[in-house]
Length: 197
Length: 197
Image (cartoon, rainbow over all chains, first blue to last red; front, side, top):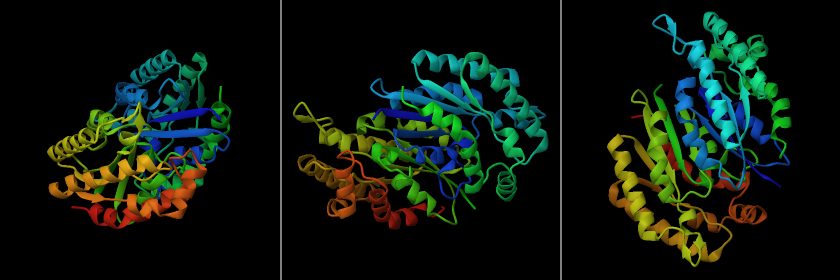
């Protein structure tokens, strides 16, 4: 079997914050991937914006994806960009888009296959509007660059389990049921994308 | 509740390689820690020696353990140091000990509470002898520095599940049952150590 290694790079949702089973959506995807010799590295960090991730992603992925393996990277970020601080989003949407574009250029230079997963909704209607707009812009960037993109926002904002667990939690992160719902949305694309080259 | 964040830093055993449930011993410890608001970051990397880990640990832990949280670090490494290459271990035991000493000084300077977990056996009797010797030296370093240390070698080398799953796997890593056994060995110390300050 091929030696496939995937780095999941992103924010607290990638890290699986709030999941009492400590799998998150990334662990659930990985554990259902029979038939592939898969190593999964979780590089989600709380509060990180696309600018934070642009600054660190390569330094963390390089030692984890040696030449000898089939290296892949899954990115998911954006919610921290759209958080309002002092009346403005932490990262301007144009900068978020630029960060994604730069990251996609860098990952292409390394030859690693890439997948981008959109941001989920939280319990804040105004921020959710900004996140939904950023989701559409990220989808355009990926579409025009031939990069796989999975949007989860529209499905999760009407998902009773996700929204209820977010409200029952800290207002942003669900428990296991919510992460299971998110993994289910990503799984079809993930399985196609994971196929060894 | 306190905001406790733990970075697990180490090698492929920390990463949970071979575990079809993608939890490893670290995920199993984290998921059984009710009553603590815990964020767990897994920073295990395949093939890394104590020298590799000494070089990267602080750069990866710093953005994950901001001042506002109760930051902790769990280290576990050594098996890759004792691997023979060209007739000698990849890292000389004196250098492994020095690496651990430097790491413990650095973590003390940052004020993060630290726990060290010893290396497990693999399916190679000669390398296991070297790992067992390094385990005793690591225990001495931690003991003299007042750092919590959990040795797992002696228990796992006679653990039927661990040794059988290692043999059934790639000769080094077990599946879920082995990682469950390792988590059980670490849990008593982990629970005492995790108590918020």
